[in-house]
Amino acid sequence: MNYLISGGGTGGHIFPAVSIANALRELDPQANILFVGALGRMEMERVPQAGYKIIGLPVRGFNRAQPWKNITVLIDLAKSIRQVKKVIRDFRPDVGVGVGGYASGAAMWAAANMGIPILLQEQNGFAGVTNKILKDKAAKICVAYEGMERFFPAEKIILTGNPVRQNLLKGERIKVKGERNLLIIGGSLGARTINEAIKAALTQLAESDIHVVWQTGKGYYESCKAAWEAAGKPANIECLDFLSDMPDRYANADLVISRAGASSISELCLLGKPAILVPSPNVAEDHQTHNAMALVNKDAAVLVRDADAAEQLIPEALRLLKDTQRLQALHTNILKLAQPDSARRIAEEVIALAKNKHA
Image (tube, rainbow, N blue to C red; front, side, top):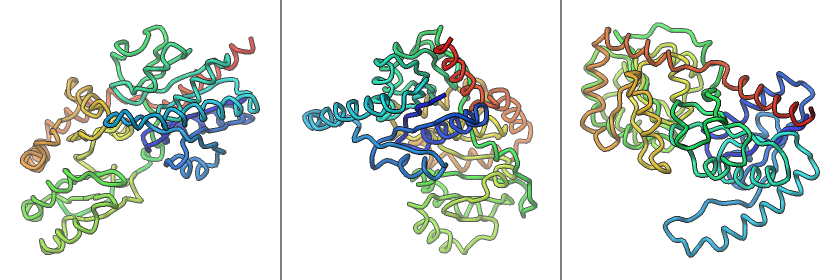
């Protein structure tokens, strides 16, 4: 079977795409898998690193602030659709898989119009524009949250969850100084508001009996490290730009502070980690707040809004870390929302579509 997978732009799209490809290869070792991405975007580097071939399209996102600049965007979209039609004719996919992002729109639109069944994977609790446009052309739509009938036809929806890094389950708890362990994740690039809140509370954290792992992200590391040094390099606070040992760091954490991206939330659910979520205000249609509220409404996480983080984030974290009963309740409730083996379940749906096509 030949499988065409498309999407990208962010790690939140690329990681599920690669996980689905890995699961397809596991279930169908003879599978031929080809990715389609957007030139200049993260997937053009990450997908080959994962061992897959990728073709780049000149597709770009629309400029909503300056609509008159979209003439060149439309020209590039037309070029991309022409290019991807040729790819489809040459590769002859049995199924197309779209995970969101600019390239996914062009590739899945072309595939569906050429009679190829397509499956969409939506990571967020608030559907992305690309998947909403493609919903009527899709044969199946795999989602991570309940209640997605407001965006997609109910008969097409399958609740599979988001694929997450399975190696996270192999972490081991290591002994560190401190009564409790707080893990702060800013993502690979970092989260400005979270970092500013930590900087402002360094003295308070240094005087606590908590061990803090502060992952700043590369973009903020130098300023955060300078603040940590100015605070006297407190021994109970680790200030790091990147965490290469995430499984162990997660295993150690009694509480996690994180943004509310789809991949991060899926990891927290899988591991049953009590969390304070600080949704990023800089994402399309505020989908991180929708992601977070899906957990908050089931008493499975605590929400601190970005605008309130400076005042509320660290006091809330310190309060929670002293409340064993509340931490246990959050652990129990978030674990109920886990969707293990997501990638495999999505891959099974993709293979079923391919078999139906040939039936």
